[in-house]
Amino acid sequence: MKNKAFTLTELLIALAVIGILISILLPVISNVMPDQNALMAKRAYHAVQSVTSSLINDEACYPNKIYALGDDARAGFDDGYGYADCALWGGRGYKDDGNNTKTDKYIDEEDANSKFLTLFTNKLDIKTNDSDILVILSNGASTYEFTTKDKMVWTAQNMNLAHSNSDPSIEFMIDVNGPDKPNCKSTSDTGCENKKDFDRFTVKIHADGKLDILEDWALDAVGVDADITGSDK
Image (cartoon, rainbow, N blue to C red; front, side, top):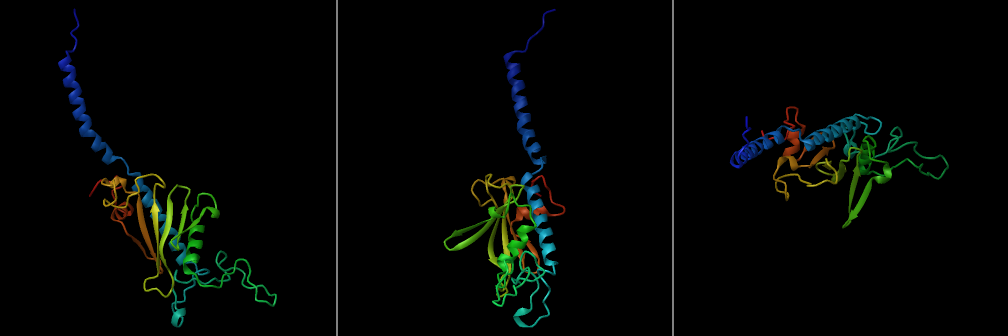
């Protein structure tokens, strides 16, 4: 019995049907795949949450002085003083040599920003060592930037933790996929129409330990009931 082969027309029709099915299924498959950037944003936020909670409850470095008088009434990260029991920002006090000489670790000048950054980064898993934490000077302004071992790049900005400020706070802009593009925080950024392209977000840390996320996509990503596939709700 002679086998009947497919005609050219039949093959073209079959290919057309396959192409239509692929065009329908690809967006569906893409939407159900986990959004890696959303997962990393959630991981970064939980790290900020954990470290902030640990520091705000650290009486050795941030003693509760809310009931003190006047400008000494502080509660949280607006306190830049060094204390004897805070090993990384304080230490042993003064050497008793008659000249009031400071030890290597003791810091008596109030610098709330530097104190918080020093203690904060010490609790994170920095990529290699402290020497890789960069302070970049640009037009007289300093930028505090470092990379964690999961390749996320953290940049401290709007550093206003001084007690004299009306809203003592500091912000971290976190790039969850490091140097990889597209570097987006919202649809207003070039080439960032797709929600899954968003890879940067900002966390604002207030002096009392309260956290604010400044980008909507990251709010969705870190929410308890967030859709981590990245599809719009």
